[in-house]
Amino acid sequence: MGKIVLITGATSGFGKAAAYKFGAQGYDLIINGRRTERLEQLAAEIGSKYNVAVLQLPFDVRDEKKVFASIGNLPDNWKAIDVLVNNAGLALGRDFFEEASLEDWNTMIDTNVKGLLYVGKAVAQLMARRKQGHIINMSSIAGKEVYEKGNVYCASKFAVDAISQGMRIDLLRHNIKVTSINPGAAETEFSLVRFKGDQATAKKTYEGMIPLSGQDVAEVIFYCASLPPHVCINDLTITCLQQANTVYFNRDTNS
Image (cartoon, rainbow, N blue to C red):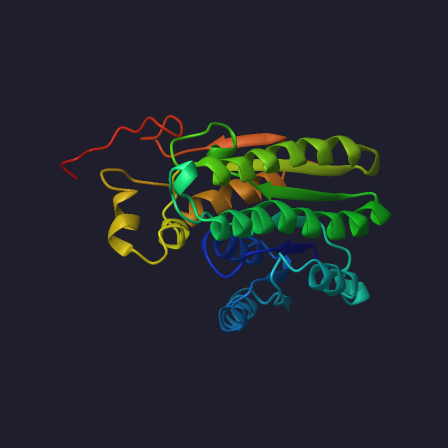
């Protein structure tokens, strides 16, 4: 087999775009997602278009036992994972702290923090045996700066930043690279999920600006993964031209 990349949350957004990008570059892919039909379609499209092997791992990253069983029981020829794109994550709701949903909080923490930890640990164990590998944790600009009504989503992404730093230190002795990528406003399914299917509100998020696309972020992910073995980008924040941080935007209201 060629180089292998495992991508979580591969059925939409950054994960899906990254799957196409790595496939186009000749990587064999392990793709993960909860939506089996989307996973099957993605595997068929990438496999036929780029003539690469694609293995499907349909599980929810929140399910600890399923994560470790699925990755631990990979066929031997699939265990030599070169790159992990630890991408599965979401935002739910944008509410003042005292008004927010506990269910939303639990889902974000279980997915963005615990799910990332489960997959990261399972793959790191495989990489440590080979004394090589690259773990790319998808964080957010919200993990660098808190904004109004961001509370627990921001907290979950601040956790990803700290976890990435801790992984980088602890896995140094195994020659494993760890990169945290922090995108700003990007037009994927992110806002539609956050606002629970409210398309009008989701659309307003990007009003008057040209946001990042999934493809933009996939290019950055692949760039980080394709550098020479002795080079590691530890932490990278990317925004569109019209965004300075989590608060300041230059919106063209006439567009």
